[in-house]
Image 1 (cartoon, rainbow, N blue to C red):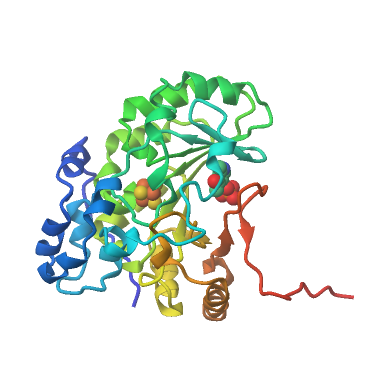
Image 2: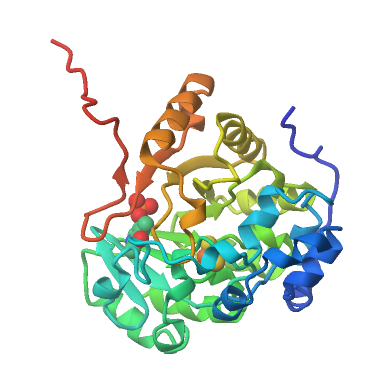
Length: 349
Ligand SMILES: *Cc1c(COP(=O)(O)O)cnc(C)c1O
Ligand code: SF4
């Protein structure tokens, strides 16, 4: 039912083949629809939304979309549509309070022990629900500042034990850029873990090439890679191969997903996602309630329904395949778990 592709030999992609695949990404919404035999949906495209946050989707990801299906769950994640132009109260430009938590040099420090580094603003795919679609990347990324400021912030705070490379997508940076950063971080004695938040191994598996793997293998810290897939159809043989290679470096692989109307808002879709990920060696980590970012209101699933879906998932899957259902609330010390109103923890006598 949810088998990973059989383990047949599959060469690691040629070094830097990912750059070509990156450049070849589809950027014209009408071309995307034509490729899928869905030209009639063109009337629903928002040129304003596409101008604010352009369409970008690698061809390998397009190949995983179902031709002729206007409700394809992968297509829905990337196509700029008229619903994005609707102003909805409560949906804002900085939904998660990142602006107040910026420490300079691309560092966002909100949670104890962990510093998140906005390494770069680039992503291989542009997800319409992304809370960073309005983030002023050009001003404040760690790579743009040559890493110097970011490393100084981290080195100067010995309560930071974990650096999270995020973005944008940190793996959109060249291997030598990444190595520059980790070489500088090596000198910081209080670092215990390195985490990478990336969607690239899923949307552009070519990125997991020999250069990247060599860099990962050479890192001195326990490594956690948090992937981002929202639907089982995002996995294919190339993704399985990339994830197997990542696991081969000793990294722990986790997945975070966003609960999205029309993409994964059913117990069946969520269960399939968690099981398919596990077949590829990935454990579910978070299921996020949507950040209320301007332009994404049509993706929202209400809390009541989200809790019911999560309960359905817990009834169906082993505990280790059930992600934590959380929301990000500005000013909180961590992601906030959703709880049933009036729900309480039963204490044993
Ligand atoms: C989500 C997030 C983290 C990581 O939180 P975990 O619960 O450890 O996964 C760290 N810093 C920022 C700013 C975040 O938004
Ligand atoms: S940061 Fe992640 S969710 Fe946002 S557009 Fe990039 S890949 Fe998509």
